[in-house]
Image (cartoon, rainbow, N blue to C red):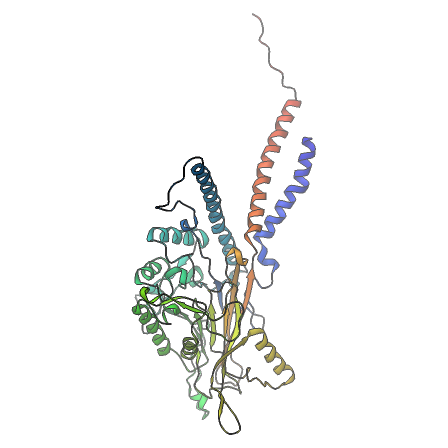
Length: 512
């Protein structure tokens, strides 16, 4: 029987455990989208942003306890309830512990993707690091410690002295030069509603503790992936040539957009966000050599939808009447942000089309979405009456790319006026929570300037990588534990049986 069990262990259980463990820890190699997209020429992009969204760590608020003031039943009912609460909380604590390491597994796996030259240059978490804004300070710091020391262990978190000041001026070192920061090993944290609240319940105390733990809410980071580029002066009479050539740059704008729509509980927080927007306007260039990556938690208002619909609810007037919850930014605020961060002067076209001015990355809705915001010119009838006012519209990214490919391949007329219009892509990153399959985003950006053109253009590509549900993570690790224990038991039994077969007899004492 022991021989049969050993054969079963060696030729079935051990290979299964080895294979599933290998697949678990190398799942990224089996998915082409679990890597950074390459440039048009197939080379590695110089800017590579690893994007996480909505881990939402739960804590003691998810545990059951007796409510204060509720009468305690007599025995044996009290005993039954105590046993139920104990077992439920034991299961929940194991679940919370496992969830931390499930998220840690995903983070570690995607950080290992590629060679040293292909790994992320920057990393961001798009808000909702924690599961509730209502927790007290003690619970906040416990969860913050789990985020920093378990889920994203080994990473540093960016700080206020590493980013541009309120006027958009870059951080300087002791010698007055732009500070060099190892962004590849730092995490940029975007605040979410479960971290600091919506506009109606966000307050300075919550903001302060978040910034102390994870870094500033509002910031601008300027990146120069092509530091050796030499701007070329021109004497052309073309109006576009009058815009000075400049070193290609990317601005990473981390914006607390939850403080922008009103009514708001603490207007000083709104002032902070507007100060960042003013700094962004002050540092915005007309040249398409500059592009912006806008990082914010709330998705923009859109006319096409993936899962969520536009929705805003408010607290009662006696509680301040502020925003209680919202799925998207309001349509007015979304249009303003698109114009302020990405908008170009009218007629600012190159080769008959608007150049890319950046990309928007958001979180919040968990399911994910990928749309293209397109500027629609005013439409009038034959008599000059306005049929549709000018403004931002949105289409699904797949549809927009389809139109672009068909136009390039066949010269098909773009009747909708989408491809050549001013446009910005918005990717709502799917959550890394287990309930949504443990997703991570890979954003690549590179600058392309064709010979003879006045200005270059930034190009962006995005991949989404999915791990799978926590059940797979638990199943593999529980199986590994069983196999290890069973291996020890079978190994010990085999050794004892082997010793018994050798027939060690007791030594008899000789008589004197």
